[in-house]
Image (cartoon, rainbow, N blue to C red; front, side, top):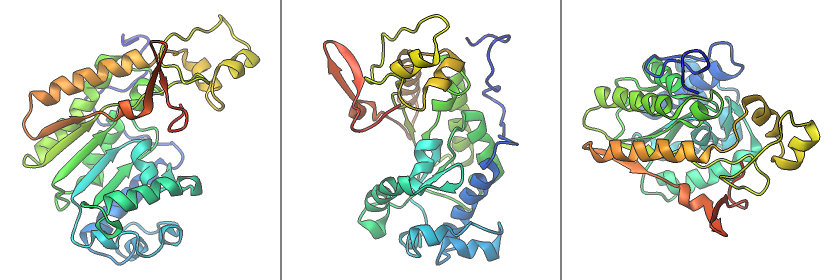
Length: 288
């Protein structure tokens, strides 16, 4: 709701780590290890074991020894954010997930020079992170002064609206604070701000117009919601997130238009279709 008594989100202007969250510390150290591997031109990510962070859990055994060979000259694009970015590394909360392999393949093909892309983009994400979490990471090793990509892509805000139930105003402030930190450290870099992607709990993928009974039963929730979502949506009581996402994205777009070396990018239309005047998520591409 955004007020002091009911809002559970952190202050959007203050860096906040997720201390105590299983896997978060490991994921953060892995991101720092990837930066070290890129900057120092290690042959494999596992070589970082001997350099700094003491263990990457067989990372190269999963991806192959040549995964980062295309980045030997450095990194053109740093991609910082949440679960959508971490998935490009094949991970969820620092743990390798074989189901992410297709996403890893797409990243290799289009965002590494060795895979045929025009740029080397380094994904630095952690699932479930809010803007204050990302801000903390940037100030604690994920934006070192020797790491100087030409472009920073920021994709954050999803968890602010969903996991923490922040208001649109708080979500926008948090994202702007992250952008400000990057601008201050790298004033000559270009910054691409990604809009928040659409999300729907409904089985049919509708983005608006959902209603739910008062005190719904478990069966009610299972009939209405996508598998795996019913518990979360019941707990947070949020049904139509799309209007909030649109509001945040419009504010981000307006903000970027007033800046130099800053660009707004919105991939939402790729995932949305219209039917009978209503918007739905394309189920073959994405499910919420």
